[in-house]
Amino acid sequence: MIEASAPGKLVISGEYAVLAGAPALVAAVDRRVTCSVTTQESGGWRFVSTGFEDDLTLSKDDVFDAPPTTIPGIVRRSIAAADAPEHIQVRIDSSNCYRDGIKLGVGSSAATVTAVATAFGVLAGSAPRLTDLYDLHERFQGGGSGLDVAAAVTGGVIRFEDRVATPVRLPTGIHFAFVFTGSGTRTATLLAAFDAWRRRGSTAPLERLAAGARDVVDSTAHPDAFVDALGEYTDQLERFDRTARIGILGPGHQRARELASRLGVVYKPCGAGGGDTGMAVSGDIDAINAFRKSVATTGLEVLRMAMSRQGVQVRTG
Image (cartoon, rainbow, N blue to C red; front, side, top):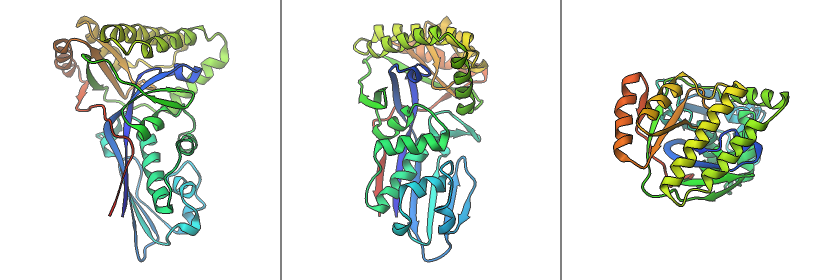
């Protein structure tokens, strides 16, 4: 048996701006996707899923004809048919990235691609390269910057720019709260709206957002400067969203942002936005605790989640 697991992610800063060449800050989180691979004597290829996919049984030939937008397609690109067994069970558990069947928006697709490709790479005798995982996930999801893949591989907090991931240490003395809006978002839909807006004309709001993203990654040496830069970046994100009309700050994020503002806390969506998950940040632990109590009364959910130092991991046995 081979088991690979990979963490989800949250974008601290740089969403959308990263698509214009700006750096993003990305944190791996302890919501992991696990893929276990067990060879069998019979039964073909059995895919058992806990999370976002239905169970599936295929022949080996069907697996190696599968399109790249499917889990079998990831397998096909991760191991040669000659190296693959005739009968195998593949268990994929992404349930930690969902709440009551709704995705949290913590990069479950990238974590899934990373875990599946790593497990089958180990079965074939070599783990996949990061560049291969970027390509696999881009085909699987239909686009994206690759930052969630980089976080799944490396763990910790990274500066992501031009598909290069550099470890970053956040300043000491800052505190986080993670909030689920209760509704999911299809990332591809928001990215399509972003692309359509970008094609229509002036990109000055995006350039200002990119400048704000750079200020955040340049402010990680001091907690007060970091929180201030993140607050300014979030204001730029809101202005950008009003101009581009993408829907990044959906109703849940707007409610959380209003509560945070009253308490002197910075709040922002993490990633594509719309619904999914956001985070509150402050240097004052009492303010964060007050935010947690207040936001729980609005129909939003404070998530038990933490940043994770561990990237993709493999266990055999």
